Amino acid sequence: MKRPLILITNDDGAEAKGIHVLTRLMMQIGDVVVVAPDGPRSAQSNALTVTHPIRFTKIEDKDGLMRYSSTGTPTDCIKLALNEIVERKPDLLVSGINHGSNSAINIIYSGTMGAVLEGCENGILSIGFSLSDYAFGADFSYFESFILQITRQALQNGLPHGTCLNVNAPVGKIAGIKVARQCDGRWTKEFAKRIDPQGRNYFWLTGYFENHEPEAEDTDEWALAHGFISIVPAKIDMTAYQAIEGISKWEL
Amino acid sequence: MKRPLILITNDDGAEAKGIHVLTRLMMQIGDVVVVAPDGPRSAQSNALTVTHPIRFTKIEDKDGLMRYSSTGTPTDCIKLALNEIVERKPDLLVSGINHGSNSAINIIYSGTMGAVLEGCENGILSIGFSLSDYAFGADFSYFESFILQITRQALQNGLPHGTCLNVNAPVGKIAGIKVARQCDGRWTKEFAKRIDPQGRNYFWLTGYFENHEPEAEDTDEWALAHGFISIVPAKIDMTAYQAIEGISKWEL
Image (cartoon, rainbow over all chains, first blue to last red; front, side, top):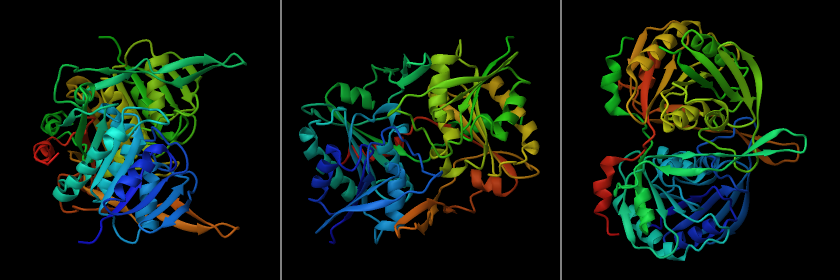
């Protein structure tokens, strides 16, 4: 069997520790093309660059590994890769390893997961990996063997149409893996208000995640809080099918 | 009954025609607070501003209408509104009217729909309105009475937990309304490649939407192509529940 072609991106930038770890791991499985932002693009969701043009630059070219950086968002990187860089459709897209968790509602804000949704949309087996540690020098070592195993199983078993994986790991030793659902919760107290030297207010994003179902044992937040890796299968079809019948009865 | 408090945003900017039309319509229903970007933020998805602080400025203050512009993304605008601006939780969030369709997969890229997902996440009845016309001076007149009717019905009937609405209208006369699902499809040929005066490549985002199921009559794309308004109920829980059992059998 031919070695799989693996496309990698992230939202922490092409030189973040997490993407270097992920690249080293994926080179054990296949040929790797990295197309990643040229600096941090955290919380860029599925943002696209539409008001100005973007570029990409080759930063490494060796046997089995090509690396490019781009001025765009993570989703731009995947679009550039698929339209302008790779010779054939990749067999796999992996994104990360993100410095910081993308569990629960964070899937909708994350640039790392935005890239995964973009890959999925294009019919590519796509997985996002995130570690619950924002530190620049975060320790990914406990996560590594699980990333290899999850990736190999995904390549072997495939995923249903329009489905991708959001994989998050706790800090430190890992108790095992839970296949989970996205936890219900939201962010609160989201801004730090400051006053500039001219006396005008400005606001930094911050906040606390409020878990609305801390007792539920089938969520990604529960898994992480109990030392497990969470695997949440995610859909790009956001339709709330169960709501269609009710709305069809409205007086419209 | 007290007049509902209605929060409005968009991704085309606080002075786009579409948001002025929506504001005028919503003032027939309740008290209105607009918090919208200070310029275009199309395709900003659920992007958040994390690398620099953001601000907001009051731009209008009259009976039943407060308007603010912000340096942030549409999702930032909703977070600012809920955390720093409104006195109580709004009864309704409406976003738009977007200049351009947000049907099918465009829901994941749209800043207008990003704001809707953000409102939904915060437990607010949230609706995005988009017209399939990108023009600066687009004609929203055929859409207006439908927007009022859909909004009134949503306020009267409510929506299930974690569910919001993505409403799109065709250009010109409207044949009626279809409650629909998100069409399966993707963008192709996404970049226009240009060469700068220094001989280096740069890339503008462009592309064509490829409908993967043009014959299916229950999709938003079908509705729009046949002159109908589409209403797609969308969920913020992206879990692919049907995939959980299969993945649980992987060798992990």
